[in-house]
Image 1 (tube, protein in one colour):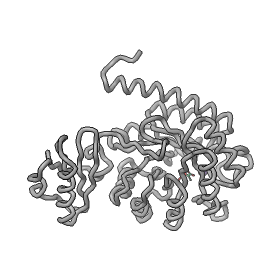
Image 2 (cartoon, helix red, strand yellow; image 1 turned 90 degrees about the vertical axis):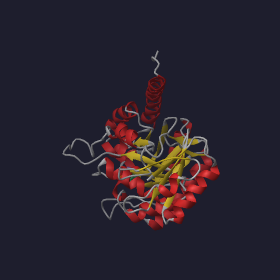
Image 3 (cartoon, rainbow, N blue to C red; image 1 turned 120 degrees about the vertical axis):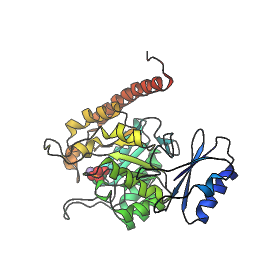
Image 4 (cartoon, rainbow, N blue to C red; image 1 turned 120 degrees about the horizontal axis):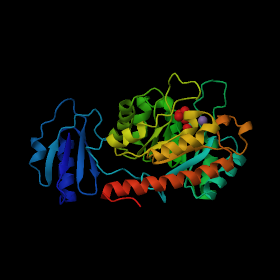
Length: 346
Ligand code: PEP
Ligand code: MN
């Protein structure tokens, strides 16, 4: 259920509702919006009687949420969620999250971070724990990799996004990084999602390679149901019969997710195509489709990369992509603002 407060409800009114929800053994999720606060109620099996809430001061209405996800949806929070870490943000201005697939060495990471920061980007990606198909492939530098990422943050003022492949890794990632990434192979690892929901850092959740949008949103709901509302969705390609590309980028999920959910959604053109020649065209298309940002692999010498070299952009290609993506994002923004205010775009 969803309890919508009047626009002039006070903080005390909100807390009275929260206390009432908790006293009945449910969980309360207050979500402030630009016009009013709504409070999500979870933990119920079946319909909840609205009577104990409807009578409280400041309550406008109690609404039954019929969708399977309650906190992720636009019913609870109409305004788009913006994730902020210091000056870096995702959900408002177009966000470029770029870096190495895997942290392989200090030199490789620092060279790349310098290029990313040099383009005015604020987010840096790099895996210290790598989920590899083969048990014999490079699995990442683990905590040493996290230390290198943390040094890159200090050296270049970047915010770090890095993957946690399991719960022990998540404990470490939470300590060193700014955003915890959950990979495609773990999108339905429900205990890991719950643990991410208990973390106090934002989570970038990649779509399972065979997941429907509803399954994707329910995975985000797992994280939010534990009280962590800072979730970034990431489309990274799905499995289809197509074999010209590593996965098939499902760009239609971007507007579909934005219609159903207030969470920001970014696109990973690198893992979804597996091939550097296809990365820039797909990245351009995703930005045009309204993606809130991109997650891109680059490498100083991809021919020697220990992981995903064929999809890594060369530095010059990356600089070119940043310029193109910003130009497209600007056009999209102008048009969506015009749409909101009903004006004509010049
Ligand atoms: C990654 O981003 O490094 C990664 C392994 O991606 P995915 O989980 O989408 O395969
Ligand atoms: Mn990779």
